[in-house]
Length: 186
Image (cartoon, rainbow, N blue to C red; front, side):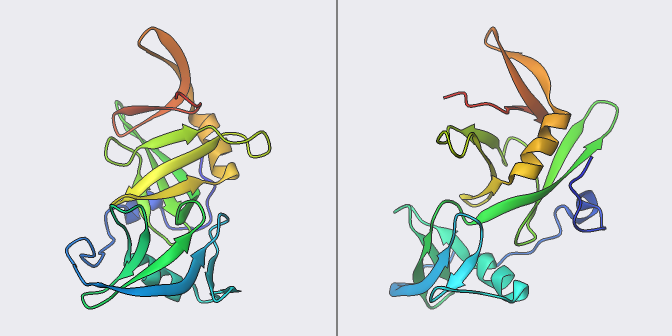
């Protein structure tokens, strides 16, 4: 089952992204940019939504989370701090692929990153407030995470099974050879 938005298979697009080497670039901080990524995944410049998806994808490709827990847009010559309310991306689609002994859950983000949950791209659930309920997340790349949207989280429930970890039963999903509980474990 997929919460399909794009008719092209996510599995076919997995591993095709080519990102700039932002982790290798070491420019000095030049200041702040009036760019904010809202909790709902909207990219705002000077409190106005950025309407061009291609521009948002370009900005996302040079986004970096540094050791100071701040987000920056980075080029070889400049580094601008931006504001991120929660995490920079949303997981908006999931597709399940299966072979005889292997299952993968492949996600698409709101900026078209394609990621398969596995030991390098972990999926976890944080405890939210009473109003929000559980908050599921997925590691996308280089410290950047996506919050899994409610429809995608419901789709994950369709793939869920019980699995025993350290003598305790958890409801969760398998992907890329790893098990990910769909409930808060911490």
